[in-house]
Image (cartoon, rainbow, N blue to C red):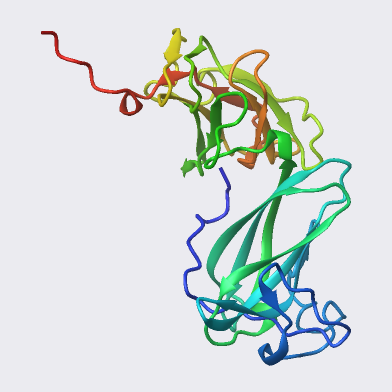
Amino acid sequence: MRTSPPRAALGALALAVLLGGCGTPTAAPGAEEAGPCGAGTASGAPGSAAGAGASAQDGVRVVGMVEQARDGASSCVVAYSVTNREAEPFTYTITFTLTDAQGGAMSNTEETVASVGAGRTVRRTLGPVTGRVEAEQVRITDVKRVPSDEAPAPAGPCPPSGVRLTADDGDAAMGLRVVGLRLENCGTRPYSLDGYPVLGLLDENHEPVDGIGIVRGGEGVALVDGFDDPPRPVTLRPGEAASSGLMWRNTTGFGEAVNVPYVRVGARPGADPVMVAPDLDLGTTGKLGVSAWRKDAASSPPARPRP
């Protein structure tokens, strides 16, 4: 769960960035050169439009505006690049924010760029736009990156493991945070669970975070209905799903506050891990609760009546 305000779809709100006089950005596949979309001061130069605000972060950069043909019509779209400086393929999830003329956030949109090769740079675009907005109004507000072989797969082909593990955006109330984990059997064979997810807490460099106690249930965190239910054997037939949860308090007292941007999750011991990015703002509590897997009743087919 992110502690920032919930993301809202950007929709048809206009985005535009001025092109750099130091060079025209290479268009994404299917896009043409900038042409009538306009040209401006040097991209990325101090004080220039494309260099102002948060237009670059963690290898992601807003690089300009390109003309793109679609359905017989052309439009101007924002182009951005993603550079992977790691030694293996990474998948990036990027939050872009459009602000008003006073710098206030208007809306967010999230883009996922999958499997950027080691040492490579790829170019993507942010969809058709209408109207014009100054470049400094387009900001990169968050970048999450995970190894591609551990990236969640919320849609598309079923992973080789036969299960699809994802985390939701979470819920927060009065300092209590809860993030839900969901495990769907998208394969062809039954998948058995008996216990709790296997968790590894990681910092922004994907290094282990020490000093955090992971407790089973909500002991010492909060009393929440169902969170302390003991584990029971669960068998998921194809199409069925199970859920678990992470719970903590964002309490800050003495000591240094701890933030955990990434969690490596295994559905069961020995399972292929999936790295999610819930942004655990643990404060100084030093504790994270986890609930046992339980089958989602809504994912199970209705029982057949006896003849």
